[in-house]
Image 1 (cartoon, one colour):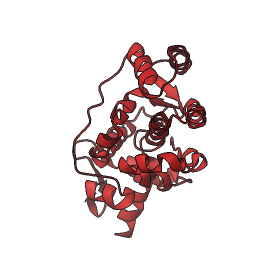
Image 2: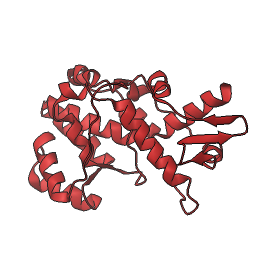
Image 3: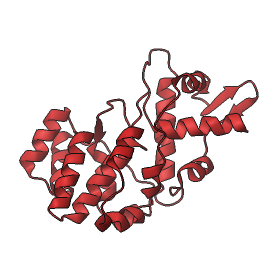
Length: 223
């Protein structure tokens, strides 16, 4: 299970100068929503009962699934609004996006995408860039850097365990507009995709927002 709860907890809250920008996106509840310790046995048992055709868990008591209401209740992020389309990026486009929105040099962006092996950046690099942007008082770039790290550790966690796709940075071009997106729907789609893949026999690893999955399963058991 690829879980980044400790990374979110260690990074901590944003600098006071950007707290308002982060809150305006509707994503600030994610800072305190991650479960640090996962239960692989519990999650694996439910993944084995996931049916792609119905997007639900088939249990002895019937079918259950994770809904947008669950996402809203558990994460407190927006579930209504515009749907952002994250189109795949080639590496050169990722370099241009990093240069424009994170205010790094083209050489810095190119070196990082080479290190990450494509249109990705390392979470550790983002943490370093965040500190650098704060020292330079480049607050908008610092907010974007913080947010990319946050969604890379939560809503859009992938199997790399160390990287995040640069494509998600597109959603933070206009921080005011970012608050109009249905982040809950995007999170649920990503989690469904991860469950679809994880439920297949050859798959040995699962990503997605494991905290959301685990707490949703716990809620199912309580009900």
